[in-house]
Amino acid sequence: MRHFVIALCLFAVAAPTAGVARTNVDDPCLEPGEKAITLRTTDGARLYGVLAGSGEAGVVLVHQYASSHCEFMPFARDLAELGYRTLSIDLRGEGFSSIGRANVTRLDRDVAAAVARLRADGATRITLVGASMGGTAVLAAAAWVKPRVDGVVSLSAPARYNGLDALAAVKRSRVPVRFVVGIVDRRFALDAQRLARAARSKDKSILRLPGAVHGSSLLDLPRGTAFVLAFLAR
Figure 1 (cartoon, rainbow, N blue to C red):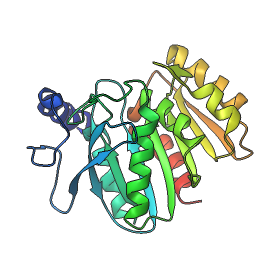
Figure 2: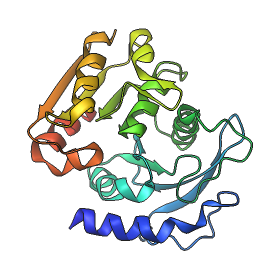
Figure 3: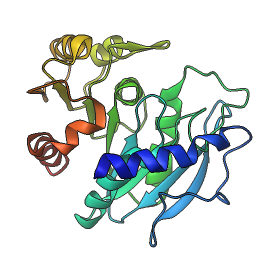
């Protein structure tokens, strides 16, 4: 059911990618109590996102390829009920976000803008969660965002994506990190193992789940959700 709802949301937000990010859009994934926002990155991209929940523990949620903030909204609501402040964003050029004159490859700057917003709203502890290309983006961002974030979760991230090098990033980063991947998810499974081995952080681990489940769908599996929630609550 979760994937059916997400699919409807993604279809509905696919068209308005042209123009600047704006909050006066008909977002079918926005529910009462949640807040639509816009962000500007340091290189000029305009991003759309949805805030849910409150509290000092913040979670940035970053979607996979050809997707949008809708992908993570069910999980964002689960986290909000547990006392987390969440921000699920549309990466530049996806959903309601625009690239403008920004560098199309710098998805890590989108993550940094989301971190800054959560901090401005009162979050003092922040974890990044990204799926597939969003996973590459959060791993890359965790290596340089200041002040340092408190944790990063990769759900099937490729080691490299469209100019972003997560492998190089984890070799520099000391941020606690968790990797989740489907065992037979082809090269993503191999990349997860490469990333986990290369990660410099002393606080790291990998969960390899049966099958070829990919990206945010790993959170549909009880072991996947439990692994991530335990990391967030540590």
